[in-house]
Length: 223
Ligand SMILES: O=C(O)CCC(=O)C(=O)O
Ligand SMILES: [Fe+2]
Image (cartoon, rainbow, N blue to C red; front, side):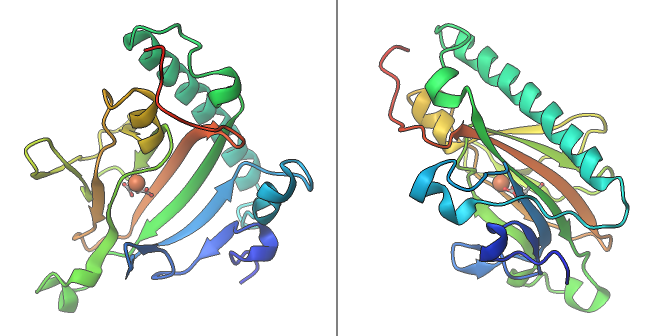
């Protein structure tokens, strides 16, 4: 495996099925993990473990340029969403810019969830959880789901799990823990999980928009 995720690559690259763990349980997905690229020394000792460049497959040859364009699109869109939220909270549009998220860190995961085979599909086993229940920790996440496979579930305010089926041409936008803190709890971070009970392999591209790498965070006093 040429692009295996490793500490030497700043934890970027390919992760096998079961290597990602959510709350102690291996997730049934594989992924390519990418982070905003960090040059040596950029964030001192704190940033050292994550220094490195992203590892893309060599085939197809255009994937690097395509994904970099996609990431830049998601960064612009997320910034606009967060500006809108700042306004909705009664702050100024750039409340969350500058030292907070003016130079946002980001993570992108290209995730693949195997479909269920006939044998293990019969008694929906616990280890078929594609991704265990969690909230995302950043500001907002743009989830680009595979059209035609409903697998993402969100827990609503009554405590029920409801499906978030893919709507072609749209993203699901999750609120993350940092935005919950910055909005003093007005925007709650959404508990969600993934169960692919279809026989088809599901692909999802999740883009996580986060505060600046060096941001020290706390609740907002001004909102
Ligand atoms: O696959 C999905 O729809 C969501 C993935 C997810 O929640 C995550 O990677 O944090
Ligand atoms: Fe998530």
